[in-house]
Length: 318
Image 1 (cartoon, rainbow, N blue to C red):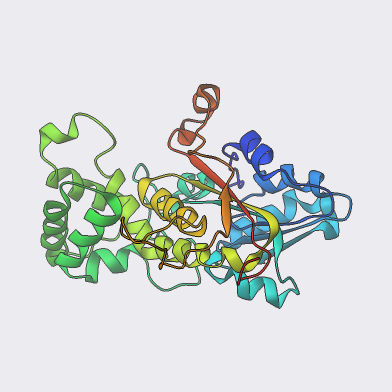
Image 2 (image 1 turned 135 degrees about the vertical axis):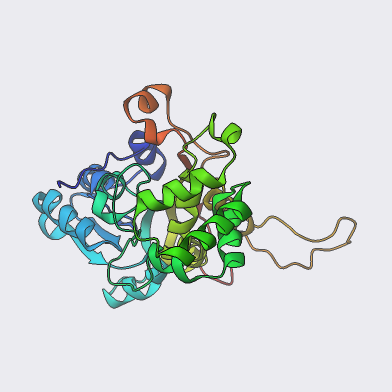
């Protein structure tokens, strides 16, 4: 199927990241190239964009959609947790702009064979990069019940996590769970009927939790956030679009920590925590989509954009 992914908060990304001619930008989740296609014209002449993605299909789609920009764009299949290593291998020490559009793309959701959707029959896969071995089927069929309950609770924030894990454990004793529809039926059976009558699809939170666990999404995000000081030039901007509270919490806390907020106990005569001001917030609170965007693209409804700017020149401060 064609790779289609509508970029979320596009006007806001362009406004707050403010790409300028001659700058170097990284789209750390290039997908089909939607955000990049809008950023690139503003970097010219003289600028460049490096697009990263774990998904080979996304890289191929971006290569096609961004072909008109020629040598101004370089696409690399890589996990953004390796941001510093990837940039250094291409001869870049630091960049002027950095964008993360987190979570799963519309293409991945809508392509049944990828196994991300709870609304279509597909193998239990959910890998963002097909090179890795761990799949949803492996977790569902081999991980201990207690560990299943833990990830469904922590990553999916699912109140029925223990019941769902118990039902999965019971079902897999009879036969392996191999498809998305099998798993959806088990989840529906585990959640009491009254709780299924309102709110999201009953399988949404469990599928989210499995996807996060399989792809190590939160660990990768935390690792990338730890590299911001190293990869941003003075005045460089970083923007992160998140889609659920766990992602947003990591971004918020990182921005707070790197903005130099003191963590010392109240009453101390001098600061001893050693926090330095590395970033300054560009958005004081998360930017969310306008009603018109949500109407045109309902999947945008939970998106939140946070942006910050690099303020220190060197690691030891000035």
